[in-house]
Length: 540
Image (cartoon, rainbow, N blue to C red; front, side, top):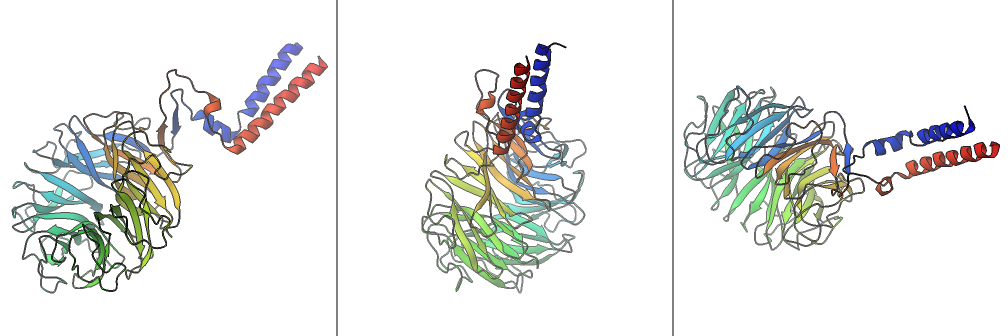
């Protein structure tokens, strides 16, 4: 072997050593020639889901086996329903759909559920047998109900509905209308230890409350309500109205460890009950958000508080952490909401800001803060994770919406992008925050968190260039607007992060930000190459 060959071999070995450092390899191996940064891992995926019409997602949940349950509405006759499900074809109107995905992103089943008129599906959960529970609103006189339904006929105006579906989607175990002669919506549903149905919403009907309820008569044009239906669906254990002389709606609900109801939404009542001595005792104006806790029996109001200023404000997401604290989130237009221990005390701009607030189990406020950028920001849902940190999902048109250095997508790509933000449990800092979207409009509408900290978000997208993972169930947008599902370990982002396309299919390594450790090790390797070259040349 001559000296030239030895020299070239030595240089190649040194270069291999230089770029075989594990940290550097992880970065460089993830770079595609179209400037797509792919961070892949097992059991994590992002996919479109939809068909030739328009679809919208409402909520998402994990079942007891780690599968993802997705609900929404479809205007398509050709949704990818699976053989043997309860309803393979669309009956008409905006039709609800229920879909289940495996942890790897495979479609287990998809079914329609609806009648010939308008429906809107609003909540999804599971019982102790992993049956799927859904609720919502129907205007159909032929909505599919079971023979043992609590209410087998349409009441009028628009009724709520409750349905229980087998884990494989093949059997409608139970289904019922729920409502009076006017309008009802059910916006949240949980189960207790005996699988009784605990649900809430709002109604314009009189005569629904049961004896012994906290509030037995409707106070205004619309009232919120909480109710309990027996596990077999045969009897209504109780129903209590909640509201003042104006209009009151419950748009979100959860339960605490004692199965007390925690509800929020909007109110136009200046005489909302139970607010004396609360965080905010007086009605701010416009529409206020509120927070209320009602006992598991429906017989007493534990606390209530307004939440809002002099403009339009609304509570859209609520959850309870491991210590029984209540976390409330939503949207505000008011520049004078009551803040406390806030990381952001001022309204940021645009038509709406996001807010987050935390109360202890008695209703005492722990913090209240604005969140957003200089344009419109909205949050539609939130959950607490296994560390009691708070994760909100929504949308933003603010270029300066706060994102973190480890964001999945640090910059907005178009007018509306999804935003996902994790706030520390004490409300004093943002742990992680990211955009997610393509070159058209994208909205984050649902979020769920499992016991391992995995997060799944869903929403609606008009973008044909979303960050879809390899092998996704549906890699391309099918219609005017599709649903998306993004399943991720949020602290270690999973998915594809697309940057703007370049005119040539090349990637410059000089344009790629590397970890300082990588740069140091690469520098050491490069120095080793130079030293070897000098030694060999000197010997030559």
